[in-house]
Length: 222
Image (tube, rainbow, N blue to C red):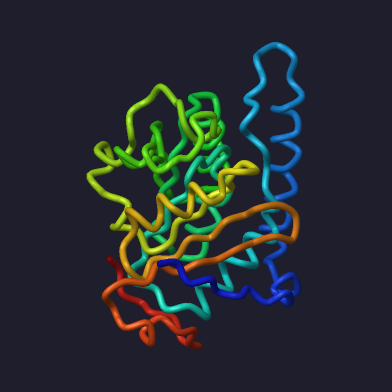
């Protein structure tokens, strides 16, 4: 079962370091230039999120939510902006991306921002998760590339937080994959559109009272 967690509307007032505001604006322009290129096919499923809002949300999660570990995973990392934000907020950050052009752009981001995160070229869906889809045409399906988890030597239940930007109509599928494969207590953060961030915690055998918000961060690493 997934338990929704309310994200306060006031998070858009959280401070963001000026260096990061500048970097996020720079990468926004870089993404726009990448999408405007005429000399290669468009990557239709690549759409940039509101990275400033995500910085605020992830920092709020870091400060207020009990975490079962320190690993952060970005599904479909694109330019690796969210993976970079998570690294800046002291998560052990990993991004998975199926498109080779985007992996190159993501690695450029890590280099230019001097970010310590890992990017894996592969499919972010765990093996067998496609069976949970109620439509065969969902954008997350059909990538002709192997699941990244074997290369990582990790499974989805090794991560404390998973971030995704589901295409319209597939948010339920992402939740069902997370519910099936993530560890009890793990968090799923979804960007579903402008001013529409959603957060869930997977409940299970553990005591739900363990996962109520708290003021101090947990410092252990998984």
